[in-house]
Every structure is written in C-alpha cells, then in structure tokens.
Length: 383
Image 1 (cartoon, rainbow, N blue to C red):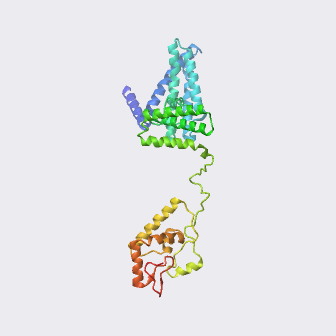
Image 2: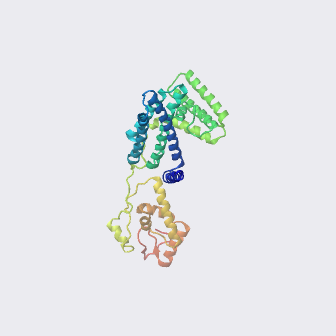
Image 3: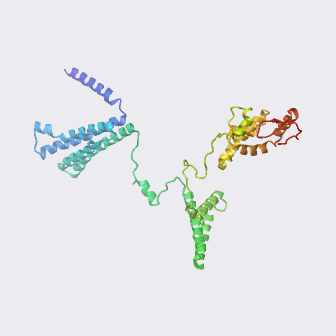
C-alpha cells in the first residue's frame, strides 16, 4: 500500500510540475512559493487567534480559522482574471490588500512579544507584495506597457535642490558653463544700466562685476584659447541682448503652410499660342507657365542642381537642351530655365556643340523654341 501511495504521489507531482511549473518563468514559480509560505505563516497566526481569542476548538476551529486567507486567495484569482480580461485588477485587487492588512492585524493581536507581533504583521504583507509584483509583470507582458513614472523620485528631488545634474556632464564642463553664463549676465546688466541712463556709480559697479567675472572665466575655463567656449559665450550674449526680438517672432510649426508662399503647380500648361509652336516637336510635352515662380532659397538651389544635372547629361550625349526641355524636365518656369540656360550655354563644351550645329546644318540656337532654320547668315553663338 505504501508503494502504491508513493508511486501515485510521484506521478501526481511530476504531472503538476510538467503542467504548471515548467511552463512558467522561474521568477513566477519563486513568487508563488514565497507567497504560499507567507500565507501559511499568516494562517498559523489566525489558528492561534481563533483558539485563544474566539475560543473555537475542534472541528469548528479547523473549518473557520483560515476564512480570511481563503478570501485573499479568491480575490487574488479574481483580480488576475479581471486583469487578463479588462487589463485592470479592479476592486478585487483592492480587496487583496484590505484583507491582507486585516489578517496581519488580527494575527499580531495574539502575539506574546513585540518581535512576534512585527513578524506576524510582516508575513501577510510580504505575500501581498509578491502577488502585486507578479501582477505587474503579467500586466506589462499583456499590455506591452511599463510602469508609471512617478513625479516625486529621489533623482528629481536632488535635481530640484541643485545637488544633481540632469545631463551627463563632467564637473569642469558644469563649472565652465556657469562661469560663462555669469559673464553674459553681467554684460547684459551693465548694458541695461548704460542704456537706461543709470548713475555713474551703478555703471562702474556693474562694469567691475563684469570685469571680475571675465577674469575668472579666462582663468578657469581657458576662454582666451578655447574657440568652442568663445562661441558659446557669444551665443549666450547674443541671446540675452535680443530678448525683445522674441515678441515679434513668428514661430511656425514645420508641417504648417507658409503664409508668404503659395505652392506653384508642378507642370501648368502654356498659353495655346506657345503650345502650338512646340506641338510638332513633341505632342506629349507638357510645359510650364511663364509666370515667375516664388520659391524659397533651399528649393531654388535644389531645382538648380537638378537642372544642372540634366544639362550635363544631355551635353554628354551631344545634345543641347532647349529652354522648354529644361522647364518640362525639372518643373520650373521657362523664364527661370532661360536664365540658367543663358549662362550654361556659354561654357566651352555647350558652345562648341551650338557652333557645330550652325556650321553643319545652319541651325541657330533660339533657346526657347524649336530649332529654326534661317536663310540669312547668323554669327556662331548668337541667340
């Protein structure tokens, strides 16, 4: 009989281990074990409390002594289920802590010494804390979010008191920054006093403070030879001197439209008269309007780079692009394309191609319209 009982116990333990223990992380298993031990300590205190204080004995004591521990376990299971379904422990999570505090207090009331009372108070709280940490890990695993960020932390308190730095700077860098800031503030103070017409005594005192701050900065920060710190000092002074300019500043969000810039259509059509002149050359070519485009400097530079790259590719092929070709390829107005082309066509390689076309085929470069054969002799390189 003992053999069969041991074998059944071994099989049950192996099945329990394989089904509930091995699939879980080791920290979850240790949390459950420690919580069970702490709950057992709390139950033992309630056993003594039910006998010594309530006077329960026999089967009645056995049935009723651990009703709070059973309620704690039930609330913990419900809280875990609520967290998995609703991503929050809800009222059951609060009940776990309330019942834990209740059983801790009742167990400590029957203690015979202060040490025993403290121990019986701590055991249920340890079990509740382990349960709370297990819930937090599983909540993070399900929701994919971390814990909350407390506003009141030791790090933030030390930074608020000026005892810690928020950035990873060395002591020398912090000292240099403070000394340079002191010089900039002293310069601003002296300038304001001079502009306001303050008495000479105040101006001399301000200049003395400025001179002293400058001497210390040169001595301790290497301001005389360090170009980086010289630029930093000038930047601080420029920012302090132009504080009033912030009133008239026009801050714009990067994704908002510019008030002074209207987007120009990429490929608007030319007037009908001009389209007819180039229709025979290329029926599918869509040209731009001759109205000047209003673009900023960066956009103009980008368009010029693209136009120049297209010009170089065509010249390498032995083709001199026309104004309408450049305008249609890049998406700019013919006026802009004509201005850029008038400069580029004077380069030696482009000029040689234009001269060759005139000598071999009698074609003059018009720049804007399709090549026109002229009967009269036109000098090479003419428009």
